[in-house]
Length: 264
Image 1 (cartoon, one colour):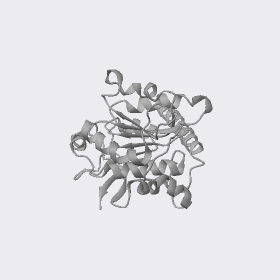
Image 2 (cartoon, rainbow, N blue to C red):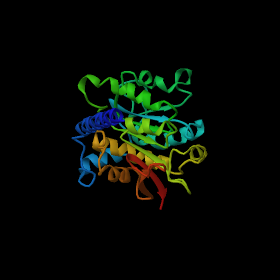
Image 3 (cartoon, rainbow, N blue to C red):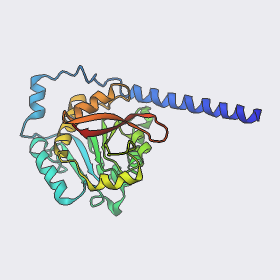
């Protein structure tokens, strides 16, 4: 019995220091991110970002449309809303900012693991994943491997909206995760809720994406996983939504970077 207690204590300590190291590593990677309450944008920069006409962009923002948001007509509608402002990447230096991908149609053999190869040599300003399919977290982890020698996380922001991937996995690889608040349940990863997420699309996704893209261009860095993160998410999703921290139904613990939104 004594040996068991000592072994358990040793494992607990090891887990604690492992988590502490990971937390410090994430904090270090985000040290240059502005405070959400102190972001001041010059009129010149604000005008450039908000301009209705796009200009060529060397860096790209990749948007992956996954489960529940991958209907061709739906994606085309969203792209048509955003492209006049940001432009589309056409593989040339004269291309625009946005690089949209539809899962599974644009992925060889329908595998999300091909995301890094599809991004290729493009230099990203951000990655947005909507309705992330299973194993998206591993695909993002592969992107992180490119920076492993620098002992830092991906140097650009990664936002995940309404994922169908493993919740803990996507939490570990994205700056933040946003789910819709489900009536009668606080667990965003409950199996009974996943079907409802797939069937119900947010009506103003184009506005949320527009705001998310602008925020990526303003902050130009991953967002910090601390108490200020919820303020960043509030600014991204806009004033029409109430933002709350995700609470695990079994443990009652609040997530650091997983949030649920509901219309006000």
